[in-house]
Length: 61
Image 1 (cartoon, rainbow, N blue to C red):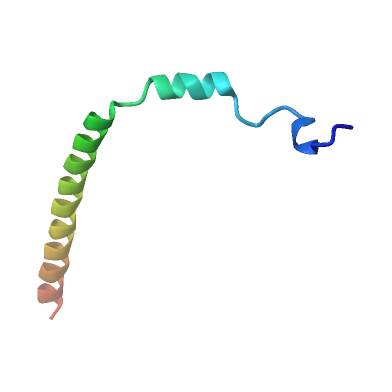
Image 2: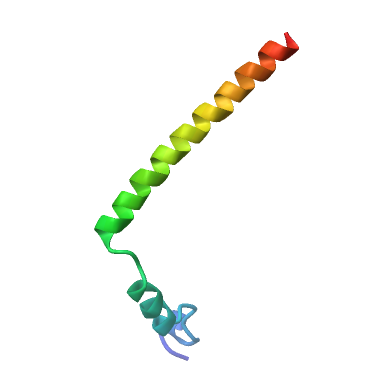
């Protein structure tokens, strides 16, 4: 048995699949713009939910 027992089995990460996935990533600048856009959309959605909760509370109260 090898001195380093962590190397006596197949590696759990498929290097070829990792390379393929990395080749399909968005460029960093595009990813940053997308993150900003999604953040803005999330903020608008949070506001809509809060307004709906306030309106529902007024109807109940």
